[in-house]
Amino acid sequence: MNRRKMPSICSIAQRGAIIGICAALALPALPATAWAQPVGLPSMGAASAADLSPALERSLGEAIMSQGRRDPTYVDDPELSQYLTTMGRKLAAFSPGAVPDVEMFGVRDPEINAFAMPGGFIGVNTGLIVSSGSESELAAVLAHEIGHVVQRHIARGMTQQNQNSMVMLASLAGALLAALAGGGGNLAMGVAAFGQAAAINRQLGFSRDAEREADRAGFTMLTKAGYDAQGMAQMFSRLMNASRLNEGAGGGSWASTHPLSIERMSDVQNRVRSLPVSRHVDSDDFWYIRAKMRVVQGRDAVSLRTAGQQLQDEAQALSGVRRSAAYYGLALQAFQRNSLDEADRQLAQAQADGRDSPQMAKLAVDIALARKDNRRAQDLAQAATRRWPEQRALGIAYATALQANGRHAEAQDYLRAKIKQWGADEPSLYQMLAQSEERTGKPVQARRDLARYYVMTGAFAAAESQLQQARGMSTDFYEQSQIDVQIKEVKDKLAEERQLLERFKSG
Image 1 (cartoon, rainbow, N blue to C red):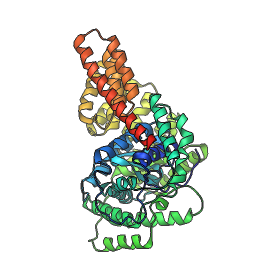
Image 2 (spheres, rainbow, N blue to C red):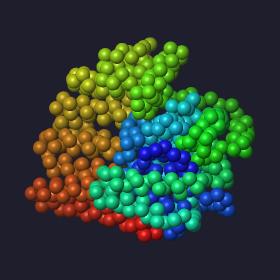
Image 3 (tube, rainbow, N blue to C red):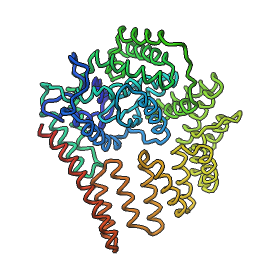
Image 4 (cartoon, one colour):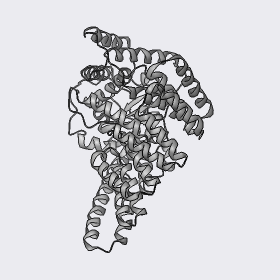
């Protein structure tokens, strides 16, 4: 899909499925509604629950995500997701109003962007992470997006009457219904319709009042969470400069979808001056994640070469953790090329002077697995999980190493323990558990756990299919009864999602 300018808060995700699904789900929710905050909204008070309840808003967000996870630009990376979501929840804990559990996710796109969706889902472009000069700058943008969620700007924009044609919106909802009928895994039939949303989204945007309100709510969260208040002013300045440089060049950016005025900039600077000087020390995780995203966002030979050169320059010019992170990025890039010897050399440079991080430990495990040195991979992963027990990516790596060594019974015990700890945030644990159960002669349980994975990722039709298979394999009446209950629950959820989309289609 071609790159285009997307001024609505949802549509600043720049790629097919996420763009179209946001438009399709948000716009038709009520008759003749608009997705984004309308210009000149007279009151900045709370949105009426009768217009769009928080529960319905969450359902919309989940429906969007169920398809968005299948978009090729969705970054399915536990290290990134945990880092972003931990930061988001830390900020949201200091919000000036009620906020749902925020869930951050990455989008592979070099443009400087972040966007909020209904229900507390917030997408973060890799370009924003790579362009951030400090952790406080990144946190400033996330805090602003959470500010929009807290103030329910999305809900109020969705319930604002608009004169745009509903024919286009109905076709978008129809495309999603068609994808849903196919099990939710095939969006090809809807891609052509997704582009139609651009014509409407181009006319929408947040009002000045809404942007100021999100700035102020975000500023409060940023400072109370312990980040450097100057980070917001620095990021706004960076974004304003980027907007001027890219003016007329096409493509969306955070600055174009959230217009940065001198008035907004002055307001933030005045707030910074009113506070005592503070200094937030960037976490090591920030620099390693930033280096990783520089590699991840490369899509072609040119962008990958550019990323490699930037990392080489940083490795030569910088020191400390930033130098280590640059070498880590080079090691990751070599690993992706399957140049395992080079990956080892670059990783050794990253670990010089005794430096270590969970990201580097995870890469060392991946290299060992790629070499088929499964015993070493297991030893490395086990040691890493003991040192960083809260890092989900390392837990997944350890389970992967156990499976690679044929230790499926141990893998199952470990995965079940981790599901109790992380299951709500890491659906892939159920998928891995199902793989080991299948290998140890537990086909019914494997399909039930795979169904749980599909439910958590919104693929209800696929979940029902797995449960029907499980019921057909089971000979135990009690187990069959349990599966029947699960099938009914999944059917109900699938019916609710279809009903939601039918409502949009007929709106």
